[in-house]
Length: 189
Image (cartoon, rainbow, N blue to C red; front, side, top):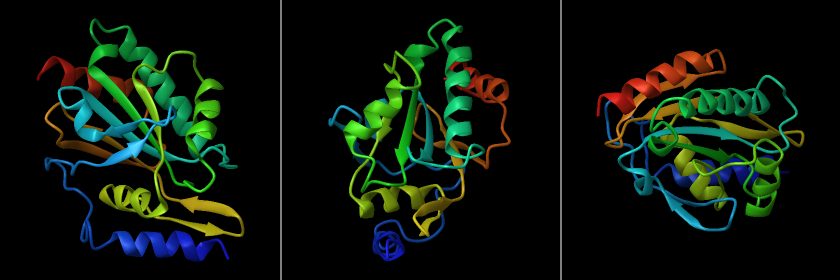
């Protein structure tokens, strides 16, 4: 039963960051994960940049979930790339909800299928317990249901000081609106 390890990992993670997800305006606790190249990446590595954090998994069968979020993030990045200094001041972090299958190699293949330049977009994984801890920071819940990972969707916008500026639920946000928020944070800090 695949459900048990995911639920166990989630509940084991709760003592480390127990309680409510990070509040808007609060500093997001630092975390460390592996990127698609197998290198350790910490949230604090991007202090001074605006950071978008989202959660997905490479085998997601629901077009309105992970694939849609990835597509919207790609469009948001394209809009920010048009802004002077935009690419240098934005980092996107996509964290897998399926760390048992989404190895760095699998994440790299997924990334290469979407875009050629990932200088400011990292696809991250770690142990199931670590991923569960990070997901809990943003109120992400997920579980295995008959071999498919069901999950809610969250996209976090973190300012240059590492504070949670806004947490988007679902996939109803528009790339242009998010890009405008990102640009505002880039321009005003």
